[in-house]
Amino acid sequence: MPNRLKSGISLRCPACRAGSLGEQPQALVCPSCGAAFPCLPSGACDLLKQSSADEAAQREVYDEMQAGHWATSDPMYSYTTLTGIRFTRALRRLKLPQGAQVLEVGCASGPVMASLEANYGARAFGLDVSLASVDMQLRRRGNFNYDAVAASALDLPFADATFDAVVSFDVIEHLEKPEAFWAEAARVLKPGGKALVRGAVMDFALTVDWLRFHLDHGRWMARMDRAGHFYKNFRGKRQHADYARAAGLTVTRVRGSDLFWENLADYYMLPLLFSLAGRRSPTATTAPKDAEVKPLELRRPNSMAHKLWRAWLTLTSWALWPEKVLSALGFGASAYFEVRRP
Image (tube, rainbow, N blue to C red; front, side, top):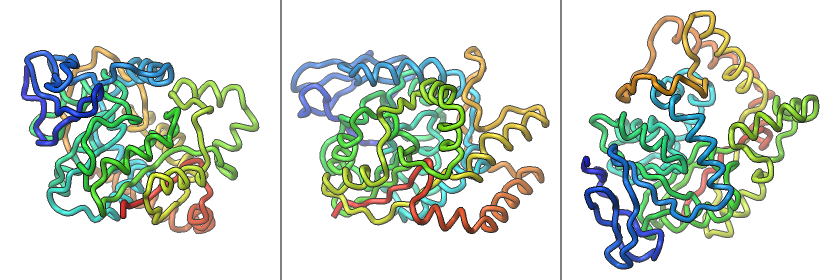
């Protein structure tokens, strides 16, 4: 069994919420209450002992859909898609100090944690509901020192005031009780700590999803369910901001995302271009489950085609100034929430 916890960040027992978990050959064990949490050979440990029906459904969706995808994907998403480029810019606004302790909720395959470690010297810890995804990312971890665990976003297994920052990308729309996530994020943040949260929202007028919702409602809902986006879990931007404030956080910025151009570029044009080139799109969500597991690499694609694509994205996104104005006003199928703990 490999040394599981490389980051130096300890885990709090989710059973008694008191003891710090210690490493045993096949499990993490709480010395206070004796609870044991099984671990896979990769070091992926399952702390989701009493999951709700909603969390169990989310785990089933992502264990089935994503395990093969994470085996073959790489961090090209952050450099190739407009969504990834904008999320990377938002991360820079956190202005993380060297060596900051950062939690990523919904870490999936690990490229954000790897980027935080490589670019900011951060000590990163990831959490995801999908044990298969955590298993895959730890098998791909290589020389990186981030940690990851399968656990609930609504009951974070960390002591109070552990992290300098919390980041989360497209997770809040999956949560049955997002207000509990905001309360937990506030709890584990240090005083002065910051959080960057992006996710789909219910008030998505004037977007591609809004058109599909009204023009092809049945297929849109089926597609959302397949992705674990259960519509009953969606909340509006104002509701999420209110949840954050109720948790004692200061909301410093709310900005809309995913209007028209971002969706069209990432989920229609980019897959078409990659298909014409005979390659798998960075936004694809499936792959052969017996695919070779590739070590995670941080590499910026610098072919002429990628450079031209990124330049074109930048120019067109600036040229489409009405969409930027609408985003600043909060319109969008998704939203960025930037908050800090006083």
